[in-house]
Image 1: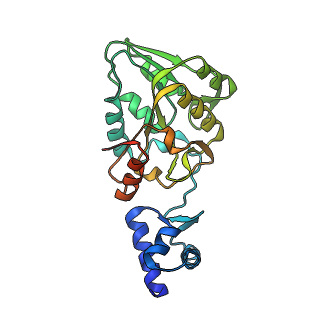
Image 2: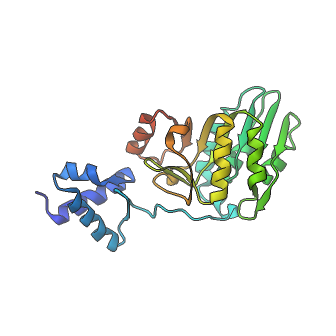
Image 3: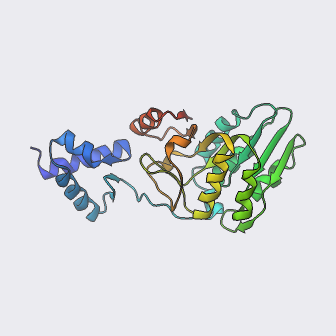
Length: 254
């Protein structure tokens, strides 16, 4: 049987490599009980070396906060641009798309080069103003309550609009992607709106940098099986990438 120090070293190395671990998997690999691993995780969390969640652990706090979009725009700018360029290639001739709110999807909007006509439905005021300058883009700006943090609209009136339309694609930014829990947003009302967007779309495309994996926001949007494509950067671990693809999601790494 491995010593406590050896187990702790093994756990931390696997966290650093994979970005998360499951109690049951580590217990099998080390041939100890799940109770033993949970005690190890508790000890390591007390030393602030990891964060425990139900049945697993991550190297960073898995809970996200509702950050102002102006601050988000300053974070991981290079990764967001690469993701945006890859997403822009998915826009087709005479397409009709939904663009949600957030810094990554706004970066995507900056790189759209529409072929012939493009219809865009968006909750983001900034995205609507940006795309409205293009002659061959018809912008449908959703109405509702304006969130100061995101410069986007929310509310019942906003959600009801999606009961009347169908679009080919939804380009959605999220705050968390958890392999077990699903896709989340830090704001519950935006999460509710995102659900309606998914229901009104034939394909859902997530734009998220690799820091979003293993994180959870306050509001759950949906399970992973509702997602068609995830575009992320090459910071994603091989094990997480494999798990995403095993669910049946197309994973585009840039």
